[in-house]
Image 1 (tube, rainbow, N blue to C red):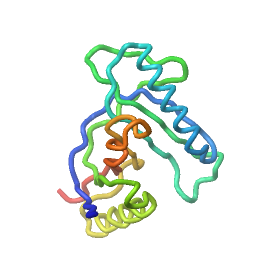
Image 2: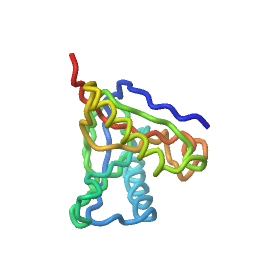
Image 3: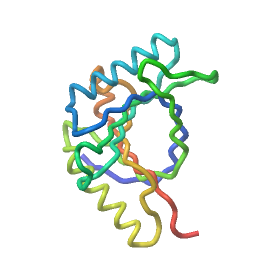
Length: 163
């Protein structure tokens, strides 16, 4: 399987989110939060799109200060209010380094490491620097569809350094 990094414009997303704080809560807890956001969207009667996962912090961040954001894109034109622990956020349009891969064929750890090296290379070359937290993007529910899981995407927002 070939994996390529691509720099592209990521669109703005309106996202219904829930946040977990503290040390890594585990996959079951993350899935439960996705289920809560999805149930909230169904209750509100809104159309949903992509699913997002963002981690705020790095290897140096103490566990108690870590933050994990779980979100589902909300599609439509009307205003939607959060509630029941769900908050509406807008992820702004941005240039992003992206990679799409199948986690069953290539370990996400390898992809994250390679993507971090790629972003470091772009910064050393004076082209781009990291402009926000990495985000995992799924076309829908990755637990309900092997096809969605096989198209996992990681995006790293970038800021141009050269004019």
